[in-house]
Each structure stands twice: as structure tokens, then as C-alpha cells.
Length: 371
Ligand code: SMG
Ligand code: MG
Image 1: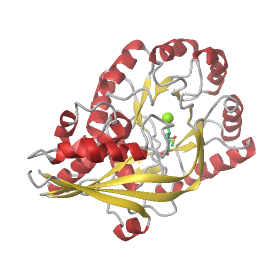
Image 2: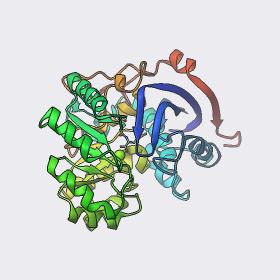
Image 3: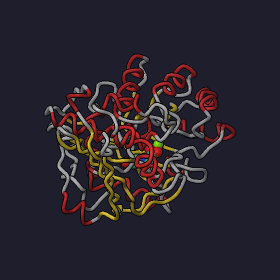
């Protein structure tokens, strides 16, 4: 396949409800959507970088900059390109995994659409629907939190994840456990604690949580291994796992017993698949994370979540958990599950007129005339 051009489009889209984490509150999203134009057809990609460098060091404006000025010129200059070539072709550029993942996704979509193969088939999916959880943000009060959680459970979600931070941890967990009995429950701190909080976090042991996600800063892998010895709740890493190598190191150190896989965070679906395979070999269960994706990212994530080692429900909620109107056909919860798309590539169609209507800017990068 020859990559001929890439269209980069920014869209602005409101969330159905504010989403508060330990690092801030989101009301709307500014998302970078890519369209890869090749000699064999087109493919779509979505960049998971947020508006600000608060979940990780990446942010959407920087992702677009590095794509336009560094990553895409290199890929557009190659005579031939498949998704499997992207990582190697971009090896000399450090970091920027979310940006790299977005172009790899678009190239993979184009490639699979051209040969009429689905993401699910390509990735080795073993299920036609995946169990879904929902990530619940920090609320202003416990009664409001209970109302939100109750609403999601009524819709059929199979697992609840509560965002926590110092001052909003043991009490909300206790309240949800008391009100909703033995619902599958886990928490996510997004790096908000230190190892000195170990005794405090051990209070969560009383609530039979599936896991605690990323309690400590992302570069504190050894401290996570220490923490894992001091609490009974299994430690799961999210932000710390940026590559297959990082996953291998964390597993060997005993820093986590479960891993949250986010293709965007690790540089793409191919690296995410390598992490899945590594974890399967080490009996480390994985689950699919979420970055408030549109239907494009959701389609890829749901396909990947159908792989065998995805043993826990993911943050793969239905489209209406995020957006009043999605840019693809919506993903709808059926008995607490989402169906895995089985059409070519991502298996979803972009509503181009709607996409156009929410576009705030667009640009096209082409291979230079000399190529
Ligand atoms: O997509 O349902 C979703 C969001 C899941 O909580 C979620 N994601 O750290 O796991 C995480 C957060 C990161 C995104 S916050 C903007
Ligand atoms: Mg997380």
C-alpha cells in the first residue's frame, strides 16, 4: 500500500455529563480524527490525546504538530507501507505514542478495509460481544454519586469503576458497596497518591474491589511493587504501561497483577496486541481501558476487547454514555455488552455530514511531488 495523503481534522463535541477525575473536569472534547488516503482506499484513525497534558504528557495540539511536521512526512515518503511497518519507520522519534497510534490505526483500517478483513478477525477475537463496565467520575456528594451509579446499573453495566482521589475514596466506595451489594467494583486514582498513603489505601481492602488502578505516579513502578505488598486489593497499572517492555518490567517487579490496555497509550493496536500476548503468557489478566473515544476508537477497542486474555469488563461503554450523537452509528448496550463490529476494517461508518458540522479545523498533508 502507498500512503498518499492524510487528512487531519479537529472536532469539538460535548460530553453528556461532566467527567471529573483527580486531574480535572471535562465538559467537552477537542478530538483529532485522521483519514489515511492510500492507493488502495481510505482508513480512519482517532487520537486519544486530551486537550491538556494532564492524563499524560501528550495533548492534542502537540499530537497534531508532531504528526504534521515529523511523523507523517516520514511515512508519506515511503514507497510502500503497512500498519506493521509504522512502528519501525517512526522508531527514531521518541515518545508521542498517542500520535503514532492514531496514524497506525488509520493505516490499519485502510489495509483491512482493502482486503475486507475486520479488526476483530485480524486481532484474533474470540467473542462476538464484550462485557462492559462504566467509569464514574468524582461527584460533588455521595447521594449524587449513588444516583449516577444506580442509573448505570439500571442500564445494565456489568462493572462500575469509581474515580478516586485523596478526600474522595473510602467513603464513596463504602457507600456504593452498601447500596449496590456485590456489584463488580474497582477504583482508579490516576496517580493521585504516594507510597506514604499505603495504610490509608489499605482501608479499601474491606470492600472486595476487583482492583485499584494506577494509585501512584506513572514513573513509580518500584513503589507500586512496594504498595502491592502492603494492600490486599490487586494493583492494576494504566499510565505506567507505555510499551510491551514497560509491561514486562512491571510484571517482573511485581508492580501489578492486572493491566489496563489502551492502544493509544502504548503506540497502537499492534503494540497493544503484543502486551496482551505477554500478559496471557504470564497469567496476568487484562481489560480494555477507555479515553472517551468516539465510535471510531470504540470500534477498535471493542474488537480488541474480544481477544482471549481480556478477562474483565472494560471501560468500553455505550456511545450514549459519552455523546448525544456519535460520529459513527452508535454503540448500544445490549444486556450489558457491546457487539463486536464484523465489517471490513473498523466496521463502522463515519457520518461525514455530521463530522463536517462539528469540525473546527482541517488540513491535508500529502507526499511531496518528488516521491
Ligand atoms: O472512556 O469510559 C471512558 C473513560 C474511562 O476512566 C476512564 N479513563 O485513567 O482510565 C483512565 C481514564 C482516562 C481518561 S480521563 C479523560
Ligand atoms: Mg485509568
